Length: 124
Image 1: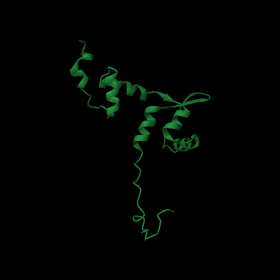
Image 2: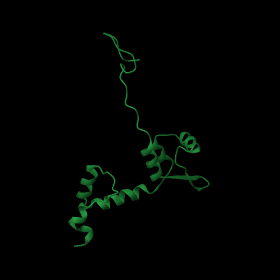
Image 3: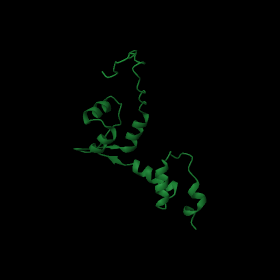
Image 4: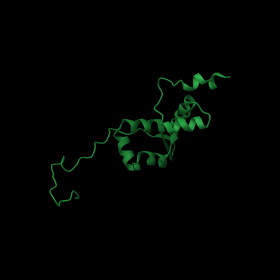
């Protein structure tokens, strides 16, 4: 039995491991993959270049918004591969998303200082 397929290795998780959703772990086990192999594949997927369309989908920002944020050093810089070709490192985009501040929880009308009386709606 190789070390890679030994039961002890399958349950050992590196100290710098990501938090992996249970569904991913279950899928990996169904396909005969241990957790370390799953982590390795996830990291490999993260280390790739993405184009305009994928960057737009991931960030939900328009090309112009990203350009302005990049200019102001608030968004990862693009890599110029040719005269008309640019790409972004997916790992940098994901790190940028992870560093974004969390949205504040929505406040109720009472917290806004507007108390609704009987028969009044909270709709604006």
